[in-house]
Image (cartoon, rainbow, N blue to C red; front, side, top):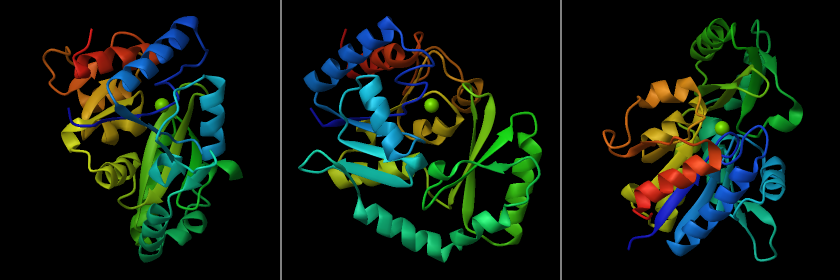
Length: 263
Ligand SMILES: [Mg+2]
């Protein structure tokens, strides 16, 4: 059987706002199913590495082969001593890309956009500038940001999602062509895994691109923006897309059983 890969988001996908006993049990079953079917596990998250590692501990998540952090701008592998190290190849690639796209100018250029506030320092990355905005005011703030980026000829893209926990709009500005999906593609090629063998799971708008390229699991608690991007439908009618009934890890488990063909 060819090697499979599960690339899954963390917040809202493997665990929810509040931990539940059912979710913990589904997480254990999911870890077991991945082991039994030799599925490689990759976490793909907007979190930075320290926050991703604390989520692994707090929720007793299965240990992944790799963690894609900061919306695809950093890839981490475990070293022999059990510490997590950035993939130097990906860093070098993004560094070249950011330089040629003039990405360094983003902060200054977007500093005065009305309705957009820079997120805390620890939420910024070398190749990611992040902003908060009110969900209601997001369309006009995003329009202004895109206009500035275009006028200043900066090679950057904005990924927007609404955070159900804080009820805030979150905008991540990344070097053009960078995304959760481009990082997963890098890993897939590195490991020689076919595109058809990748299953992606997510819950919100910033997972849309990742989920649209592979077999996809949309968890039961997914935000309307992701459902709209992928289209609704019954699992049997939407080949390659599985809209789970249950939330979070239980939904991912449901989807994995569907794609792996196990009961
Ligand atoms: Mg999420």
